[in-house]
Length: 137
Image 1 (cartoon, one colour):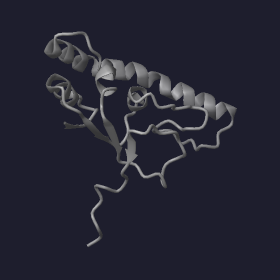
Image 2: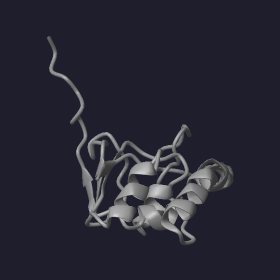
Image 3: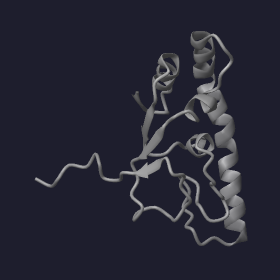
């Protein structure tokens, strides 16, 4: 099943049918993608999404980077709670969106390593930047 993790219904269907899933995304604002893949995401040198920080931060910028990411975890809990309830009801067992996403076979990330800051990636994370760009006419 080819799915987008922002609307995890495809992942619920893949779990129900017991088939592998392929996740296709740009980036999730709350770093749920890195939690699901158990990929390190150190805030000491990887700037959070929607910040003006670079990978060269002083101490106060690093603190800002950590603090900026905290509300996102609570926001993701609120946003994905209906999907967790839906999945638990549909699959007849208690599941979370994080546990569903962690079963994805491969993660296709629409980012280009040239345009991103250096970061660790897991073996099942493939960078496919530019795949949805059209040639100039």
